[in-house]
Length: 350
Image (cartoon, rainbow, N blue to C red; front, side):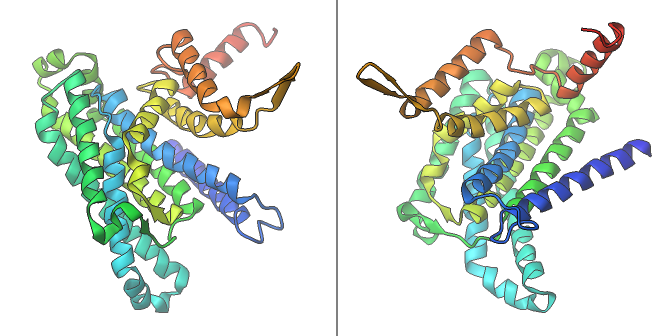
């Protein structure tokens, strides 16, 4: 009971913080305090990347399957929901207009999120059932191929803009992104801590041993893949309706690699590691844009122009010094508890 109250309290505080941040992103700000559009977009993309990283972590980090096609499921959710809102969004808003504009538009977004999640989950099942019998590099190749097939198919569908891109209504804002990032983290955390989570981890550690102990490995792997795909679809829906424009260039294989970098750098098999990785990979390239020019003699070194090279070097150094990721398979809470115990054992002296 105490744990439930604590969880509800944390969720309420998070939603209140999302509401304040969202208000600060408006033209009037929150009690006159606002943040600019650039910072607002960074916050929004951090939220979307947290959904992507934690959902892929369920597949790669906790189940031990190496999928590199997450951008494909994101694209499926984005385009399916965008086609729905562009085609039927205004009509639905009109039907529920008596509830007020905000409630009507929120209903449209919620329906779009359900559609995006279901379509992405179905695609996850279609890909997962035959391909999850493969392992390692073969599974990676299949998922990467799937993502590229999806992108090329969408590129040739004129009904969703084809190569020219697709204009989408802006139903999503930071409040919705924050709420669904929180839902994603809570749902996946509960899955990992359930019997299903223990089965997934046993598959990751030793699939043959798990199967010998009676774990239906195929069923659990496919279920994990479908759940991860569904949340990738949710991230796609929020991206489409926040960005207000979709292009297939947003879902190239480089996007899938970016999501993998998030969970690898944070620590595969760690919830807080995936969140930390999403924040680092979103913010670090933008912080490197602020690097100053340095003049040595007559030569001016523009380090900001070399930000991608510096970013890659930082990632390489991180992997050399900490190959298991910043948090490994541990959670941030575990580190804090160990730190408190160590602090008590030394009597708080340093």
